[in-house]
Every structure is written in C-alpha cells, then in structure tokens.
Length: 133
Image (cartoon, rainbow, N blue to C red; front, side, top):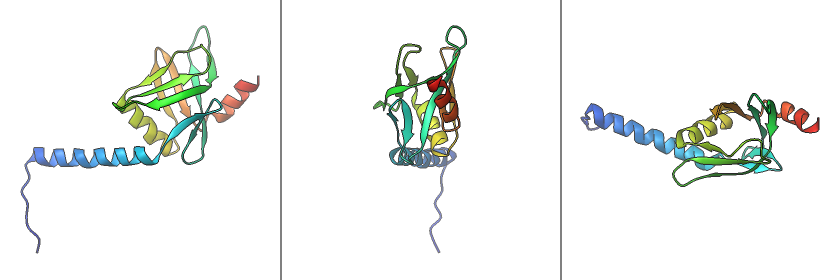
C-alpha cells in the first residue's frame, strides 16, 4: 500500500495551479496561429479572419492582418493591414483564452477601444464577401 501524504489547502491549491499552467503552456506550444495573405491560419490548417464592428465611421468590416506575435511576457500583438484600426493588443490572459477558443474551433471575441473584434472560422464567408465587394 502507498504512503499517505498530508497537504494543506494552500499546498493543494498551488499544486493544481502548477498543473494547469503546465497544461496551458503545453497547448500553446502545440497550437499556433499566424498571418498569411491577410488571413489568419493555424497549425491545424484552418483559415480564419478578423471581423471588426466599430460603429461610426467605419462600420463593420473584415480586417486583414499583416503581422502577429506573442511577446516574452505572454501578451500578444496583432498588426492589421491598412489604417482603419490600430494594433490589437492582448494581455497574457486574452492570448491564452484566444488560443484555447481557436484551437477548439470556436471564435474568439473581444472588445478593444469600443470595437467588437471577432477572430475565427465562422466569419470567413463574411470576410470573403467584404473583400470582394
């Protein structure tokens, strides 16, 4: 029979946090997103895009992406093509949430500077239509 180990509640909480952090960093290492020709691609060979609902003066539009990167502190920056909106900056929590959503096939939705920003596969039809009109 195995040994019985006594843990305080704080020891258990710290242990669970460590396990969760390791799972998140492992999934980050396996799943990647990157810009390609204005589209967002992922390591599962999915094509996604970015939809911005900004209200006046630009309204709702598909936004091409020229660059994106994850900084050493875990935050991320998405650089759009053109000048309708500025860089989209995500804090470390938003980066993890976005990667988790996108890797499971769900869209990621956030609000930045009053604009609703959606990244995902379900809006590809919207982006194709917007870019051809």
